[in-house]
Image (cartoon, rainbow, N blue to C red; front, top):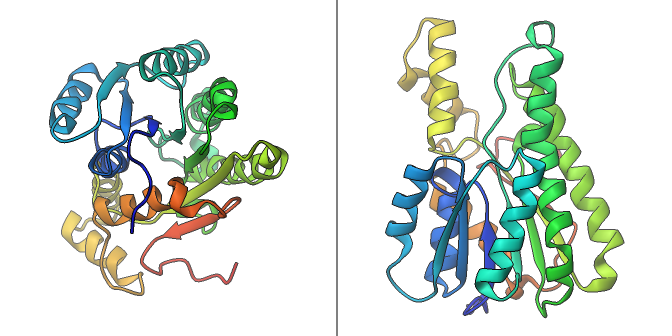
Length: 262
């Protein structure tokens, strides 16, 4: 299938590693021009060098998407560099772990800026450029925790659900401009973030990371964790013009770990 991504102009935040990098890799393989982003300049440079082979250009813009000023700068510079924006993937690192009674107001504010306002601000800044695109599409990266809360991740459970509400609402409000808004909800995937969470569990439960990984795999219908590339292929399809009549979708990519119907 042709995803119709050749020469499309894409911005992917949080893309020096993990799920963001996997999405950037698939977009690049499909011929899109890319702006990638991370708050770690060294890792971002390594990611850019890894992506530079093949068709399509790659530009790296380091910075922290939890900063309102940087969100505007990133989008402005990306649009200037590529001559516009067709596709936007809003992604960020996850918030800290903890239970309700252990988290402070500052913890909540930091998480809100990172996991909610980053999506809102990036979309708002990109909107004028998306309106000028023939194939505008936005994909918010959230988490299966938005549908099925994960223990010790109350910040993620709460704020990812808020991003789903934002995404769905924008799909309705801005559909008149032919802009598609969708969200993809990864389950447990083999990334550094997942490994870090499982290390925390192993310490708490006096087990090993391997044991905790096996437990998490057993909770899925497929009895395994995903590779980042499996997630990325689903994400890029939804983002691409090949999915031109899909909007307002909240798609779990979790191997069947979510047990609900809706």
